[in-house]
Image (tube, rainbow, N blue to C red; front, side, top):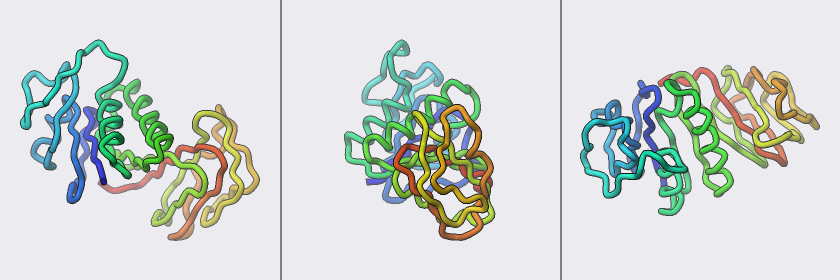
Amino acid sequence: MKAIILLNGEPYKGEIDASGAYVYCCDGAYEWAKDKVRIDENLGDYDSLSYLPNPAPTEIFPSEKNFTDGEIALLRAVKQGATEIEIYGGGGKREDHFLGNLHLLYAALSFGVRAVMHNNGSLIFAGTGKVLLNGFKGQTLSIVPFGGNAHIIESSGLKYPLCELDLLYGSTRGISNVAVSETAHILTRDKVLVLVNGETP
């Protein structure tokens, strides 16, 4: 099952392909998403939207809670059997929420679910083991450790090879690499965050 999560960050300018997907819309994201993509379920605490959306949420969460609306949607998607998740509207606006949304990618990876966050001009995903970087030839790739140091065993298809290299948590060593091949990968035994610049919405 593919899930799409729409968040109340910077409105996504590109097309969103919801075919075959279940679409969760979180609170204020409804404002930018309602005329762009089919919405299957609205959820959240509705402290950002002054009216109830359509379809009406089955549950309204308290605004004072221990989870963001995005995390509620992610956990629900995982519980309902999602094997891949696409997140839109996760960047821009509040930087604290953007940082939290990066951790949603980490959480999805911990559940064994591939999640990708599409922003205007970039995409971001977390990975471990053999991380495929296919289809990004000519684009800037930044690879940073997530949750601690990351040892890169090998790589292919990158301008600056990463081989038997420790990326230290707190260092910028993995910023601004470039994919020089349509097929590329890194192999790591740890968790990394990959940011691809240049995605066109």
